[in-house]
Length: 490
Ligand SMILES: Cc1cc2nc3c(=O)[nH]c(=O)nc-3n(C[C@H](O)[C@H](O)[C@H](O)COP(=O)(O)OP(=O)(O)OC[C@H]3O[C@@H](n4cnc5c(N)ncnc54)[C@H](O)[C@@H]3O)c2cc1C
Image 1 (tube, rainbow, N blue to C red):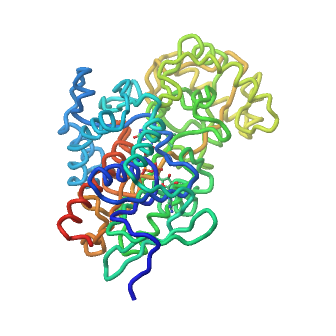
Image 2 (cartoon, helix red, strand yellow):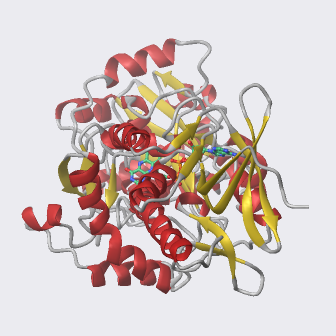
Image 3 (cartoon, rainbow, N blue to C red):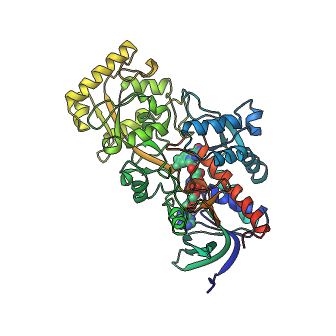
């Protein structure tokens, strides 16, 4: 018996974040009827936290004299991933990302205030990060308003539970509304845009190699629990081999990403593991994605950043070595640091900032053998005085001695922004089955889609995640429109 639905649409989009809203607006522009299901009380998902997105040969770049080409970007993705990305998907994204900028500015109303990089001193970073005034949160507001104006039905606090299949084709979606009532929507096509699995400890443990899913601190949307991935698997779609790709970064527990203490913890100064041993060239902190991958692999998935009063004075008077997105700007003078770090160290309930008059006292407080930390600091101070780090070859400008107490230890744990690899799709954003054939009517975009990255997130093309989310959204809608008009999707 044919399925009974409460309402019928050309396309149902699951997830009202960046990729989902981009798909919905385009579907409406293409003359399709469209519904968006969003399980949270507001749209935006992890896209609301993003600051900007990547594009190549955009007019915003051209007018600023920035000459990053599509070819350069394409080859950057291929070489960074050791060709583990999907070249056809990368090519389509790279080709169309500049159109996203035009659409968001000229049709939706976004204003681009800058095109830049994320980190200074990061060799090879392309100037692709298009910063939206009011950040992507503002763009989400504009997109939602545009979708409503164009007649898209938005169902808030309505979580999709199942993709209904009939005769091997998508037929609709079953969801639960905020009262727990079942909602059944028929659709010729379904776009899955649920933002990956960064908020699911179980899926983090299933798909990543770190085994610390429950410890990871999710900095993105709480709704990103991998629902779309599980629904697509149930519908016969298959995983991309790089489904375990995640964007991690060092982050303090119970702090915001605007905190100056948190930003201090990722500066390229002295880092030691839970046993008090230095473990890397701390220049890793210049690329927070690299630093996050390293942190997740350490015992306890954490490290301590050790600083003295000299570091604090330098950060306040001269500015930081690296910021955190636009939440703390590169070279910003860290004026909040002295007050914030004192308050944190004095807070008896806080276990991630400690102060000691001596290194030995600090070591006791962080549970490290004093002689181990003292030896490590002494060796490091020697490198700083010599201006040469024979152990990890860190640049001399980041080698500052810890010889001017009081001393502080800041505990950095593993934060997660998004998961970035998921399902196998083709360059039309169609989910593929085990035979590599597209499943009729099943589309997959943003962080639910695999193929843009290899094993790790590529911060050297800044804005890739949101750029892909916004671009894959409208591309999926265009493909659906063409196929519905051709009678291919009914
Ligand atoms: C702090 C932070 C800063 C970032 N900065 C940048 C940046 O500057 N540039 C960049 O490129 N990327 C950045 N990112 C990453 C970027 O935000 C995301 O990769 C991208 O925007 C994700 O878009 P999406 O549409 O795939 O997912 P989301 O925007 O997360 O949307 C998914 C939506 O689906 C909903 N949903 C989930 N399950 C269901 C269900 N069953 N039914 C209905 N709805 C459901 C969720 O609630 C959510 O609203 C940042 C991320 C964070 C956390």
